[in-house]
Length: 279
Image (cartoon, rainbow, N blue to C red; front, side):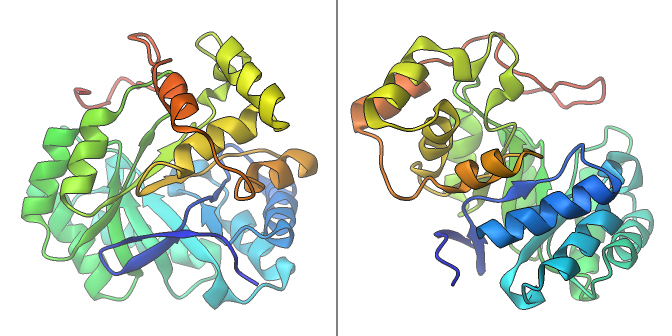
């Protein structure tokens, strides 16, 4: 039974915990995906750039879980978001996944070389062609998200961005909520870097007090926020199961504020050379 809560946005209903697959590859990826689905995950996150879509599709088929019960997201790399290239990338992703359609197709990163109007037009065309049930973006700061919403004929249902207690994303969250867009958190545990979110004394104190792991506390912080989805990644079967087990408890508002208060100016983990100007 699918008991995972969902965020509704633009006609989409997105499971609030997804299974992130980067940087898994090959048979290890396929096995991890099958394990995640056996644990109860119903949301898989991949991308053309991850070079693991074929393995994700293999894991989905091996799991025995019906395709209609699993939300599948993939993304078009920033070098392929021009008119024509985006649609070809989406078609190639479907071929690798072995699917007729994904549930969500995202522009992985904006491109400074391709006008936003062109890439959003191509994204809408991919949806019209039936390549994706829903469309959205990733790594869009608030002002770029506002522009994308204005340019898009179809609803943009998600903006997938880095988010964890070390990184304040209040401006992007506010922009998403203004437009009824789900905020999907990647690196939701901070990847253990930038000082280590999971090693923060306040995170560990809360975890000890309520009998949960630090990762469960941080993931609960994500999904307890309105319209936030988190996509943690692990190849360890025990951690895969633990990361989904965040619905049998809740955090006190004081603890939510403590975790949000951990944000720091150097908290961003992912900022590549082609990244946009962040909020």
